[in-house]
Amino acid sequence: MSRRAAKLGLAVALGIGLGFGRIGQAVWAGELSATDEAQVERLVGAEVKIPLALGSGEEFIPENPNGTNTASTGTAQGHVLDGEKVIFYRTETWGEIVADFEEFKSRVSGTLEDERGWKRAGLRFVEVEKNPDVLIILSDAARLDATSGCSGDLSCTTWDNEVIINDLRWREGTEASRAAGMETRDYQHMVVNHEVGHWLGHYAHETSCPNGGPAPIMLQQSTGLRGCESFNAWPLESELWTLR
Ligand SMILES: [Zn+2]
Image (cartoon, rainbow, N blue to C red; front, side, top):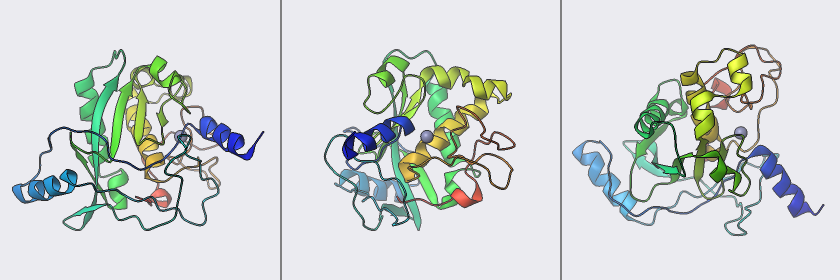
């Protein structure tokens, strides 16, 4: 297997990716103060990119399967409002969706704004319709199966700034989460935080709990706990970093 093929294989196995690029062409639809809104309009109306910064310690840097925008080093700048780093996201659906999309939107925004979440890493997530940094998509499994690097079994994050949540898993969780008695609502918090974590720069999965305790959010809890004491829907203190 070539090095490229090996890397792609790993990317497929992990179901993750990263990338650059602006997406979307619509109208700002957030709820902010008038001052914030003016700043946001200025930001999303411009061709602002969040450069990708990779720490030298990364053990795994997936190769962009699209062959463009390969990983490079740099300083993550992002958008800043009132001293906070701001991530613009847009929610949408792919394919035939069974779950209630309004509930999905509400659960996603609730998760991203929750005091237990990535907000603790100094990030503020703002939903927009125009020029998001990342799409958060509720997708049918068939569409995930057809997406490079993803599988219909799980959710996935791609090189194209797509956090794709599997509609079936969203509604039912996984065998492992159900067996552990994880509530669907907690599974939903977990899968949003986990996939967004990949997009934020957590490319590799955590694989164990050396000190016991709850599972790291970047451990693949959808498939099992790997010795951790409990399921956990939120990033641990040690995971509160981002390359965005
Ligand atoms: Zn993952």
